[in-house]
Length: 151
Image (cartoon, rainbow, N blue to C red; front, side, top):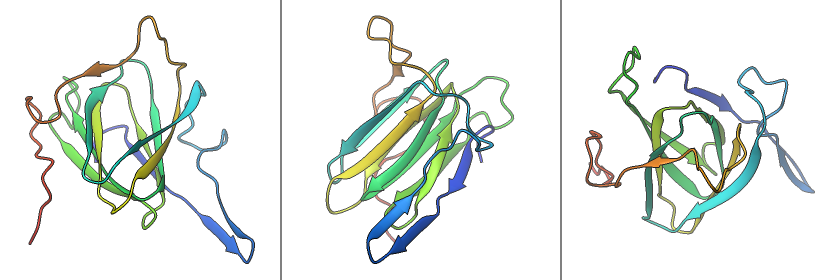
């Protein structure tokens, strides 16, 4: 596992009325602070990658569908420099994935319908100077291929 990445298994409580799932609490060990919450989605087969933040911690929860979320540690001096992690998250695996600053991340919708991610971040988005640094999802130095792995 990439250094400073945390996975929190989420508990879903169900009854005849529906369900409840807590995602992130201020008393969680992995809580780093609050900036804002936003929702993003991807349609089947779509890859949204790669980017990283210099200050911001992300906390992904896939609330609909399934996503393959991939992380790449490009941090010089990190004990996990060069490591790639894959996480299969969503309806079949409800987890919160905490992504530290300076770790590239992206996702691919692997469900048959749109997948939806709720992200709780530690910083408010700055429209004039975004804390977001991007590279092309398929043409870059990251040792990862987004193609499905059959077999």
